Image 1 (cartoon, rainbow, N blue to C red):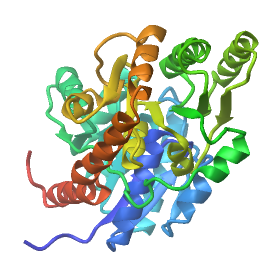
Image 2: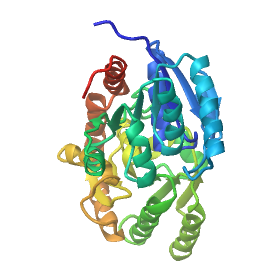
Image 3: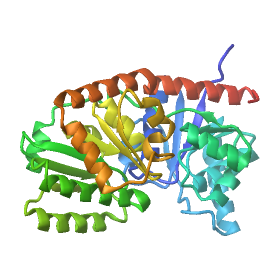
Image 4: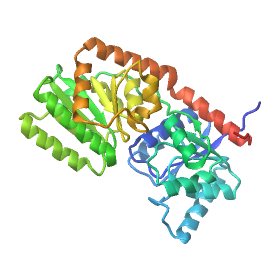
Length: 379
């Protein structure tokens, strides 16, 4: 069967540092590498220059932060998007966030262009999601719990396609220079926590830091902690770190803010604490992961529970229990009690990423779905 040439408009609210944005950039890069035509539309952000380096057209629209907008402004946005679609001869639109997807899908429907929407979590505004999904030709869900969430919400069965990881971009590299830059001794035990420091994930970070204080004062005196991520609650995180340092009498928590070259920071770690895409990227770098996210605490991820961890998206879409400083401390002690356990968990994690989450496999899944949509196949 002959495939339809693809001219895809990838639509995002903005291009700030986050799991969704990083996923779209990696996906677009893989699609372009295969000779597909990709156009990106957003209001811009800190990842803009990185996205421009992909070599595809990048357009700017001042997308609103929610769908509470006046009819006149909505009309103006839709007309601008229609002109971009016509100029670039777009034949499929893929949205990932609700304001940008809603406006772009309205423009697409006026031109009979099919649409795909990926649901990345349960954090979307329900009223906005219920405006976007009826305009979607096909719904993609990044995990099984999200598929179940969408089925309960709409009665529709979305297609599960997990985030893919570029295993060349995410692999372990030498971290000695970065350790020196941060003033971390070579013999230190290093934990890296990464997430956007907003909403519940900032609370998880605070709980984690309190657990690290307990460990520093008891069984892990050589502990060093690196926190990577930006967001509206970073000030609170810095205040807690400062308070902890008053107790420990030794600064050991490094709050670094947003970083783009995450491979360097994952490579620095003996263990990464994170969720969702952070967990996937860390494991691709051969690092053991303790998973905790918006939904709650999952714990140490290893070969015995890979599928369970994936099914709850490493604590973002499901969990085993609420986060607490005590369970964090307990699991960190367990991992650090054995160098062999750390090494084995990291090696098995990398193998799992190569086997099941390689960006090439996930791009295959998505490109097949695109072709199905373009040919008008029913679910």
